[in-house]
Length: 280
Image 1 (cartoon, helix red, strand yellow):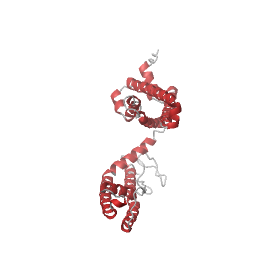
Image 2: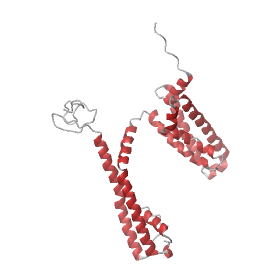
Image 3: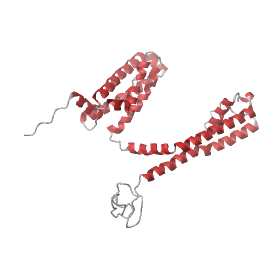
Image 4: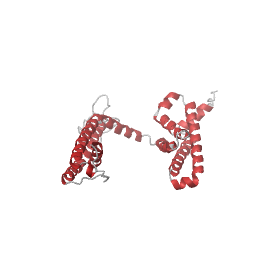
């Protein structure tokens, strides 16, 4: 006679509901949580509209506190039922869950702090788990790895651009002067950044012919400079993707660079050898 499986403790049951999504209760909890997060963000946005706040301010404030209390209880339950509490608290979602409830309490001593509650939108990333889209996270890891490998090149590029805008801003300060709105070198550097990035707010504009000629050069230069970081990241992204390919080659057609879990050649269809033997 086989022993019946032990019934889960309340802590284990709550853990399955909150952290797992394979059960009906877990999926229902996740969907309800996402709906609540969306509603709370909408409330925060509505409260920032003066006409709506003046008419429905007390109601919106009560809803905001209601959502905060619910999220506080949820956060406490996550810590209580988690087998590795410190690991959850230090995790990305653990930090986001904490930040999502702090602004309301901070607003008690710092009026207006509740505007930061829009950070709750980050909690919507859990939709990947609910909809079983976690495999897309791997693609984000590829992108992050490419960005990390581009870090040194991007740092050099940014340093060069900062040096360039300081020089160009100083030149424009000398050419235009205070009479035309370039009252200081920092303000002129601000203009150079706005112009080089092709934003062009128009709050400061050169008036002399020499200044306008320099501005035109900076604008044209801006189009070329913007393409540089894009090219750097694109190259590193291609390198990361190639590094994820196996070095196995097909013994029939000689094609190399198959996926690590590939069983057949993608060109001729011949069965590949194991990754260990390196043969087709």
